[in-house]
Image (tube, rainbow, N blue to C red; front, side, top):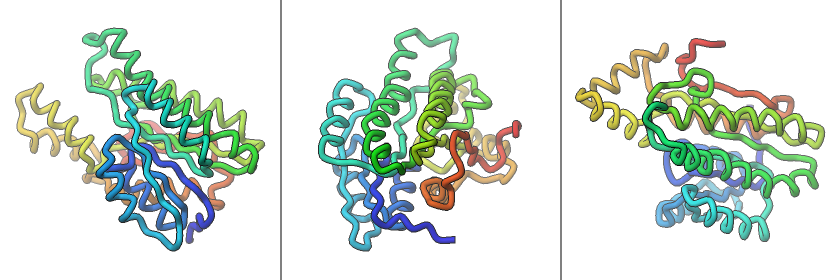
Length: 260
C-alpha cells in the first residue's frame, strides 16, 4: 500500500527532533508540503532543507510552546496566510513529578503546554478543513493516558483530558470529512525518553544503563521503538485509506500496555 499525499499541506508540531521529525519526513516522503514547527530555528531550517521533495514547498515556523501568549500570536499569524489539510499536534512534554509534590501552578503550566496550545492550533486549522470538507487531525500523546505512571503526574492528567477533547471533537466534525485521532506513544528511542531515564537514574541512584534496561524488559518486544515506524503510522492515519478511522486512541508501544 502506498500513501499519496500529493497536493496536501501539513503542519507538524515539535518536529525539530524525535518523533515529530520522523513524522515530518514520512509526510514529505508521501508527497505533502510540510511546515515544521518547534523552538530551535537552526534545527528547523536544517530539517526543512533535508525533507524529501518532489516539488513540494516546505517551510518552518518558530514557536515556543511553553509561552502560550507568544505561541498564540505566532499561530494566528501563520493561519492568516496559510491553511493546512493535515495537523499533527505535538509539543514537548512537561517536567516529571509525582502528584504529591506538584503545585497547582505546575498543572496550569502543563495545561497551557499540552492542552491550550493544541486546542488553539486546531481551532485555527479547522475553518479551511471544513471549507474543503477534508482534514486530518492527529494528536501525539502517551500510553500514560490509559496506564498512568506515578512520576509523570502532569502528563498523565492533561493528556487524558486532551484525549477526551479529541473524541468530543471527532463527533462534531466527522460529517465534514475530518478525522481526529490520538496516538498513544510508548517507549521510543528519542532524546525525551533518555532525559526521563536520566532523571529517574539521578533520583534513584542507579546507573542510566540499569534504568534503561529495566524499561526495555517491560516491553514485550524487548526493544525501544524506532521513530520511523511512528512516522509510518501517522502517515497512514492521514491517508485516504484511513478515512473510516476517527475518534480513537491508537497505542504504538511494542505491547507495553496491559489493557486492550
